[in-house]
Image (tube, rainbow, N blue to C red):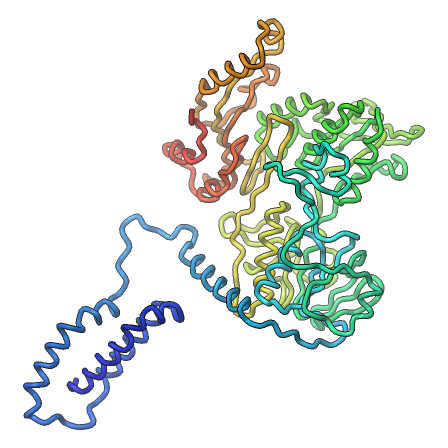
Length: 614
């Protein structure tokens, strides 16, 4: 290498050195180093144009040595390979990839926000983004699209007369309002005591329109419009068009299917009489049931012992207690949440639901129904007859895939739902999110999840991918869900909870005083009782980290499951976690999901959950 070429390389390096901060902010560090290395190599391999004179050799040699002493360390630092990882370091669940993805996503979002929105002129009946379904998934997708594409024109199509709203409060908090006016406004108080409305409100203003107003729009403008009281009858993927229930055809650039689920019904209840049997899914369903139990002495039967049925039984019983409203819950399992909880916990949960005033009939099925005056008579398989003023069916939902089926999208015959790839894409320019989506979970395999958290985060990822041709973000979120069943039961969970799986339970158990002993106990003031409770608070039985068989728990003993953790296992791997009266530990649960269960390491595994803390 000639001295002239080497000096040129050093000068080039010196020019790069003061700009390292600039490089770091504009290009990736690896790209900067690659550029420097390429520059040095090109000079080193470049053949000299002239042969240097002999009398320059000594001065050149001195200059080279001096330059190496000054610039050598700098060149080494810039061109040295990254240090090797220490033993034990690992990128759990591809954290490195996620950081890169998040950085790229943030950079793109910031660039979109900084850009001046330019509203494009669109032909009549064309929308760059159409979201079918006006639930939480579409709401989250809409916000994500507008973040990345501030000038986006979005049309949301919903079959209700209300904008996107939260469904969970309809069977939980809404029934515990003390002010009827609050309920009429569709508001509730969350667990922090803050009043909120079930209708979702974000940064964007959503303009509601009907089909007549839609017809008058000549060109879609920047913003969000909600078409209420409408359904999509046909989706033509090849032509990128859809047909509304009134026959109007709309064109789209990209479309999201977020059609949710349809409540299951029971054919055996058809003989109950018109209007006497309803499902429970929408705001209108809530209003009808709430209005009914505002009257005294009503008898309500809830068929179903899962999430919705159990929540609703407790909630309605609580609300109607002062009005002498009687709630009966009927289901075929051994106990409440029998398809989700281990058998012993399901049976204990039933004892707690009964304490809330619910007449629970487990191991029961409805054999027939008939109208008797203004009431419904249900005959169970064991011959028992139950009278009701109204029957609510809460036996789960089915993915609403009728539109997707017509469009020729691939369906998951085992789980239900539309099959999508990791980016929640079913076909080119067609995305799906929420209850009706069958996606590949990188930790747990293909799944279809029917929880609020999944709808929000799935909708957001779908929206981000719809708004960017460069971003191909995979959906990796492990959604959580939660419930409250009376004052003694509250839980959060992640992963797969199935009572057919093997489980490991770790409990902090505090036996309660039996009713007879409590009645015979000396009377104490509230202050003394509180002091006694505080004194005994730390005296808890430490449970072993082994599965608890059903025989180990006698419901009549009224043993209280105060705080605990249930691990669900499949092929020796942890696939689900139930955190019982143990809140704020969802992130800890996500970290161990998919890990191999080792009985020797269980104490370290559950330590973050504070099960045995005094």
